[in-house]
Image (cartoon, rainbow, N blue to C red; front, side, top):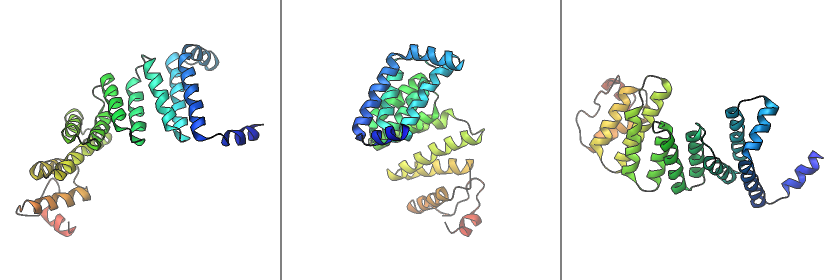
Length: 232
Protein backbone atom coordinates (compact mmCIF):
# COMPACT_ATOMS: atom_id res chain seq x y z
CA UNK A 1 0.00 0.00 0.00
CA UNK A 2 2.83 2.37 0.87
CA UNK A 3 4.46 1.81 -2.53
CA UNK A 4 1.20 2.44 -4.34
CA UNK A 5 0.64 5.62 -2.32
CA UNK A 6 4.18 6.76 -3.08
CA UNK A 7 3.64 6.34 -6.82
CA UNK A 8 0.33 8.16 -6.62
CA UNK A 9 1.89 11.03 -4.67
CA UNK A 10 4.79 11.28 -7.14
CA UNK A 11 2.26 11.81 -9.93
CA UNK A 12 0.84 14.91 -8.21
CA UNK A 13 2.32 18.14 -9.70
CA UNK A 14 4.82 19.95 -7.45
CA UNK A 15 2.68 23.10 -7.22
CA UNK A 16 -0.31 21.04 -6.07
CA UNK A 17 1.82 19.19 -3.50
CA UNK A 18 3.09 22.52 -2.15
CA UNK A 19 -0.48 23.77 -1.87
CA UNK A 20 -1.42 20.66 0.10
CA UNK A 21 1.48 21.21 2.49
CA UNK A 22 0.48 24.87 2.92
CA UNK A 23 -3.08 23.84 3.79
CA UNK A 24 -1.71 21.25 6.18
CA UNK A 25 0.56 23.80 7.91
CA UNK A 26 -2.41 26.14 8.31
CA UNK A 27 -4.48 23.39 9.89
CA UNK A 28 -1.62 22.35 12.17
CA UNK A 29 -1.25 25.85 13.53
CA UNK A 30 -4.97 26.45 13.84
CA UNK A 31 -5.22 23.33 15.98
CA UNK A 32 -1.78 23.50 17.55
CA UNK A 33 -3.10 23.41 21.12
CA UNK A 34 -4.88 20.11 20.50
CA UNK A 35 -1.87 18.69 18.67
CA UNK A 36 0.49 19.71 21.48
CA UNK A 37 -1.78 18.00 24.00
CA UNK A 38 -1.65 14.79 21.95
CA UNK A 39 2.14 14.96 21.54
CA UNK A 40 2.56 15.55 25.26
CA UNK A 41 0.25 12.69 26.10
CA UNK A 42 1.84 10.24 23.64
CA UNK A 43 5.52 11.14 24.16
CA UNK A 44 5.44 12.33 27.80
CA UNK A 45 7.33 15.49 26.72
CA UNK A 46 6.81 18.99 28.09
CA UNK A 47 5.01 21.62 26.04
CA UNK A 48 8.18 23.33 24.78
CA UNK A 49 9.62 20.03 23.54
CA UNK A 50 6.31 19.22 21.90
CA UNK A 51 6.30 22.53 20.11
CA UNK A 52 9.86 21.95 18.87
CA UNK A 53 8.54 18.91 17.04
CA UNK A 54 6.37 21.21 14.98
CA UNK A 55 9.53 23.03 13.89
CA UNK A 56 10.99 19.78 12.64
CA UNK A 57 8.22 19.70 10.06
CA UNK A 58 9.62 22.81 8.39
CA UNK A 59 13.05 21.20 8.12
CA UNK A 60 11.56 18.07 6.58
CA UNK A 61 9.72 20.14 3.97
CA UNK A 62 12.87 22.07 3.19
CA UNK A 63 14.79 18.81 2.74
CA UNK A 64 12.14 17.73 0.23
CA UNK A 65 12.57 20.89 -1.80
CA UNK A 66 9.41 22.54 -0.49
CA UNK A 67 11.10 25.69 0.80
CA UNK A 68 8.10 27.93 0.06
CA UNK A 69 5.85 25.68 2.15
CA UNK A 70 8.40 25.75 4.97
CA UNK A 71 8.43 29.57 4.80
CA UNK A 72 4.65 29.57 5.13
CA UNK A 73 4.85 27.24 8.13
CA UNK A 74 7.34 29.52 9.89
CA UNK A 75 5.11 32.52 9.19
CA UNK A 76 2.08 30.74 10.63
CA UNK A 77 4.06 29.63 13.68
CA UNK A 78 5.42 33.10 14.39
CA UNK A 79 1.91 34.52 14.18
CA UNK A 80 0.60 32.10 16.80
CA UNK A 81 3.34 31.65 19.39
CA UNK A 82 5.10 33.32 22.29
CA UNK A 83 7.87 30.71 22.25
CA UNK A 84 11.37 31.78 23.37
CA UNK A 85 12.58 30.23 20.10
CA UNK A 86 10.89 32.88 17.98
CA UNK A 87 14.21 34.46 16.99
CA UNK A 88 15.47 31.10 15.68
CA UNK A 89 12.31 30.56 13.65
CA UNK A 90 12.55 34.08 12.22
CA UNK A 91 16.18 33.52 11.28
CA UNK A 92 15.39 30.18 9.62
CA UNK A 93 12.55 31.80 7.73
CA UNK A 94 14.87 34.59 6.55
CA UNK A 95 17.46 32.07 5.37
CA UNK A 96 14.84 30.22 3.32
CA UNK A 97 13.51 33.47 1.85
CA UNK A 98 17.03 34.55 0.87
CA UNK A 99 17.58 31.19 -0.85
CA UNK A 100 14.37 31.85 -2.79
CA UNK A 101 15.73 35.30 -3.82
CA UNK A 102 12.96 37.02 -1.83
CA UNK A 103 15.37 39.49 -0.27
CA UNK A 104 12.84 42.11 0.85
CA UNK A 105 10.96 39.44 2.81
CA UNK A 106 14.23 37.97 4.08
CA UNK A 107 15.21 41.40 5.41
CA UNK A 108 11.88 41.66 7.24
CA UNK A 109 12.33 38.17 8.73
CA UNK A 110 15.84 38.94 9.99
CA UNK A 111 14.62 42.21 11.50
CA UNK A 112 11.82 40.36 13.25
CA UNK A 113 14.35 37.85 14.62
CA UNK A 114 16.47 40.73 15.92
CA UNK A 115 13.42 42.32 17.51
CA UNK A 116 13.05 39.13 19.55
CA UNK A 117 16.81 38.80 20.21
CA UNK A 118 18.82 41.99 19.49
CA UNK A 119 22.20 40.35 20.17
CA UNK A 120 21.83 37.60 17.56
CA UNK A 121 25.02 37.84 15.46
CA UNK A 122 24.01 35.36 12.77
CA UNK A 123 20.90 37.43 12.06
CA UNK A 124 22.98 40.62 11.84
CA UNK A 125 25.37 38.91 9.40
CA UNK A 126 22.61 37.61 7.15
CA UNK A 127 20.69 40.87 7.31
CA UNK A 128 23.85 42.60 6.12
CA UNK A 129 24.06 40.29 3.11
CA UNK A 130 20.39 40.83 2.31
CA UNK A 131 20.85 44.60 2.48
CA UNK A 132 23.95 44.45 0.28
CA UNK A 133 22.04 42.48 -2.37
CA UNK A 134 19.37 45.17 -2.27
CA UNK A 135 21.98 47.90 -2.85
CA UNK A 136 22.10 49.27 0.70
CA UNK A 137 25.85 49.24 1.35
CA UNK A 138 25.68 51.53 4.38
CA UNK A 139 23.00 49.36 5.95
CA UNK A 140 25.07 46.22 5.34
CA UNK A 141 28.18 47.77 6.90
CA UNK A 142 26.16 48.86 9.94
CA UNK A 143 24.85 45.33 10.52
CA UNK A 144 28.31 43.78 10.24
CA UNK A 145 29.69 46.46 12.57
CA UNK A 146 27.13 45.31 15.15
CA UNK A 147 28.74 41.87 15.08
CA UNK A 148 32.24 43.30 15.47
CA UNK A 149 31.06 45.42 18.42
CA UNK A 150 28.99 42.76 20.16
CA UNK A 151 30.93 39.52 19.66
CA UNK A 152 34.20 38.74 21.40
CA UNK A 153 36.92 36.52 19.95
CA UNK A 154 37.08 34.35 23.08
CA UNK A 155 35.93 31.13 21.35
CA UNK A 156 36.48 29.61 17.93
CA UNK A 157 32.85 30.15 16.93
CA UNK A 158 32.86 33.77 18.10
CA UNK A 159 36.12 34.43 16.27
CA UNK A 160 34.65 33.02 13.07
CA UNK A 161 31.70 35.42 13.37
CA UNK A 162 33.95 38.44 13.90
CA UNK A 163 36.18 37.48 10.98
CA UNK A 164 33.14 36.99 8.75
CA UNK A 165 31.95 40.50 9.60
CA UNK A 166 35.38 42.17 9.27
CA UNK A 167 36.23 40.46 5.98
CA UNK A 168 32.90 41.31 4.39
CA UNK A 169 33.20 44.91 5.53
CA UNK A 170 36.68 45.04 4.00
CA UNK A 171 35.46 43.48 0.75
CA UNK A 172 32.58 45.90 0.44
CA UNK A 173 34.73 48.94 1.26
CA UNK A 174 37.25 47.84 -1.36
CA UNK A 175 34.45 47.54 -3.92
CA UNK A 176 33.39 51.08 -2.98
CA UNK A 177 37.03 52.19 -3.48
CA UNK A 178 37.28 53.16 0.16
CA UNK A 179 40.79 51.75 0.26
CA UNK A 180 42.09 53.12 3.61
CA UNK A 181 38.99 51.84 5.42
CA UNK A 182 39.25 48.47 3.67
CA UNK A 183 42.93 48.13 4.58
CA UNK A 184 42.26 48.99 8.23
CA UNK A 185 39.58 46.29 8.39
CA UNK A 186 41.93 43.73 6.82
CA UNK A 187 44.59 44.60 9.38
CA UNK A 188 42.12 44.01 12.21
CA UNK A 189 41.14 40.68 10.67
CA UNK A 190 44.74 39.54 10.20
CA UNK A 191 45.65 40.58 13.73
CA UNK A 192 42.97 38.18 14.94
CA UNK A 193 43.99 35.37 12.62
CA UNK A 194 47.09 35.70 10.41
CA UNK A 195 46.68 32.49 8.38
CA UNK A 196 44.04 33.89 6.00
CA UNK A 197 45.71 33.62 2.62
CA UNK A 198 42.92 35.34 0.67
CA UNK A 199 42.85 38.28 3.09
CA UNK A 200 46.65 38.60 2.88
CA UNK A 201 46.39 38.73 -0.91
CA UNK A 202 43.84 41.54 -0.79
CA UNK A 203 45.89 43.33 1.87
CA UNK A 204 48.94 43.51 -0.40
CA UNK A 205 46.88 44.40 -3.47
CA UNK A 206 45.12 47.22 -1.71
CA UNK A 207 48.47 48.64 -0.57
CA UNK A 208 49.55 48.50 -4.21
CA UNK A 209 46.46 50.44 -5.25
CA UNK A 210 47.32 53.16 -2.74
CA UNK A 211 51.03 53.19 -3.73
CA UNK A 212 51.96 52.50 -0.11
CA UNK A 213 55.52 51.66 0.89
CA UNK A 214 56.80 49.24 1.99
CA UNK A 215 54.40 47.10 -0.01
CA UNK A 216 54.94 44.03 2.18
CA UNK A 217 54.20 45.72 5.47
CA UNK A 218 54.12 43.20 8.35
CA UNK A 219 50.73 42.81 9.97
CA UNK A 220 49.76 40.86 13.05
CA UNK A 221 51.93 37.76 13.33
CA UNK A 222 52.76 37.85 9.61
CA UNK A 223 56.22 39.19 8.78
CA UNK A 224 57.42 40.82 5.55
CA UNK A 225 59.55 37.75 4.81
CA UNK A 226 56.48 35.52 5.10
CA UNK A 227 54.58 37.78 2.71
CA UNK A 228 57.43 37.63 0.19
CA UNK A 229 57.86 33.89 0.65
CA UNK A 230 54.18 33.30 -0.12
CA UNK A 231 54.48 35.63 -3.17
CA UNK A 232 51.27 37.37 -2.32
